[in-house]
Amino acid sequence: MNMRWMTTYHGAWGLMMLTAALVTWHWSVRPDTGVAWAATIATLLVMGAALLWSGRQPTRDTGQAAGAITNAVLFGALILACPLLVKTAGVALQLDHAEWSRRATMALSGGFLAALGNAFPKTLTPLAALHCNPGTVQAFQRFAGWTWVLTGLSFALVWMVLPIDLAKPLSVAIIVCGMVLVVAALVRLFLLRERRMIH
Amino acid sequence: MSRVFKALADPTRRRVLQLLRERPMSAGELADHFVVSKPTMSAHFAVLHEAGLIEAEKNGRTIYYRLKMSVLEDALLGFARTLGWEEKAPAAHRTMPGARQGQRPAKKEA
Image 1 (cartoon, each protein chain N blue to C red):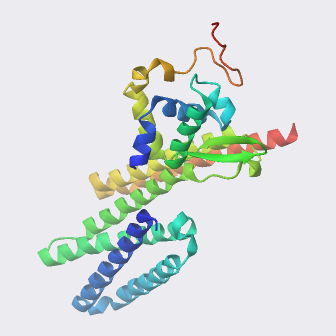
Image 2: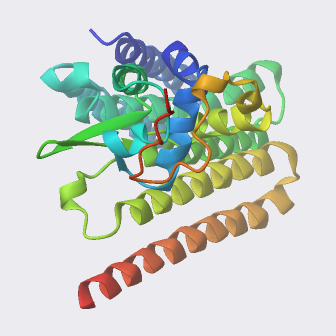
Image 3: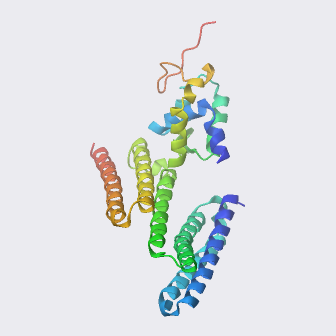
């Protein structure tokens, strides 16, 4: 059995259990916001179902579809658990937790973007199925991967260190810049493909 | 991750990855850039494949290799180059000067 997959699988379950425990505690402390907590529990149930499904797939050893779902659930659980942990600490220590809760969520989202970009150049299409020069496709994948990783890391950094009023517009600008760069590279790839098909 | 570090520790394998950065190449094309024997090159390809840094694809009788590196692994390779590991490579592992794609290095006279 793939050890890395096993660690991710059990890590995801552990984080989901922790999130469920925190949600239950917050629900008991503030029953007036029960709808929000119920929605979180429903989300956790859907994530748990997806994780159970991925655990029963025979492809788990090869790290294909089941591996991707397990990773996604792990990230989802992390995005739910971290702000809840900050919120719990804030309630316990009677501090203003709203700002740090938001910062943690946004920093994790940036980390998620970076992780997606990191894996992008590893996603290969069979050479026979490519309608373009394989070297050009590879160059595009590397460029998009690097762009997305740097975008995600900058996004996370901005939310971790800058004041909220500055972090909000700057993080949006970073994401837009990253998207424009990747879309421009994609358009160039399509134009090269068209040109190749005409000649 | 240890497999990746092991794969990147060798200058020949790093050079193979650098060549594959340009475009996918056949095993023969890649071997033409080095003075080492074909079985040695095959062993290098096997280590890189095992580390998940390259992907092999068979087309008829030719095996094509292509890069399968994540951004992090790409950055590690970049660090290896920046730190000047290439200069420390043994002479026998270095790329033949003047060797071009599809061109075998000239044999030395006995």
